[in-house]
Length: 337
Ligand code: GLV
Image (cartoon, rainbow, N blue to C red):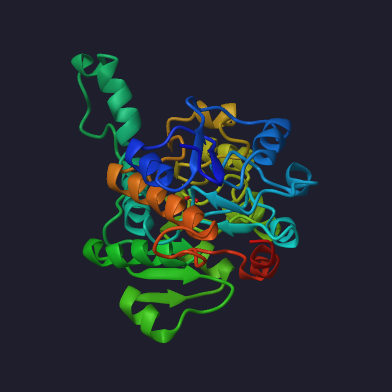
């Protein structure tokens, strides 16, 4: 039976989540994964009241220009640098993201990358799989750097950064962090974390994890000058966004041993990866999967669905999407509902 509103889902999604949407709205879902061009996005969004989209779908003023129907966009991610929020707000289109449900899983993954890069897990496995072990192994082969007991630096101490910091206690690691503003003392105490200036963080951290959101000010927050301040024994982990690190400068620092190793889940211009990084054995690389546990990806998808339904006026939170990013857009949205 046709429903009064319809939505577009820009990528395949868990069937149970699609079923929860289909109780209320007509659902048009893409059956294969691909990066949509601005023209494709424009066409798809012109025909629906709402959409669930992914990080590779950039929604800007051009994509929504002249669109009189679209009322809500649910981003399938906590980061939303793919959304032009001012343009959506101006157009009265509600925008949502998926915070919190991914904090712990993403924090686990930051540690996975830190440990894997410090202890050379990926390159040792490649060596083993290539049958090289049969040729013997020296006692001083495969030496990594220690993680336990070292000072952990966190640049960007939001909720994921805090979840990373809490784990440091188990590794006996003091935590330094930098945010533009200090966290309340109670949170610092709970995370056993000390605020320092960015320069001090870069100089003092034995290992550094980046968790800051991407925006124009954070573009290349870690470039050649910042890498030059880091310890040559440091591991750098980026689970934040491509573009926060100058990947070309990082590749040079890794090649020259000015930074010991890197664990990278995000890349400038992904899914393309700087070829220089792909060649380096001291870089552990993964395809933007920090939140990808079965439970967490399901929770993110369900939260995106709940957000969208609520924004379109359905379900238990009708009219109040749990993770609304632009409440200012509501005025026009409500007038037109
Ligand atoms: C993933 O990068 C996210 O922002 O959820």
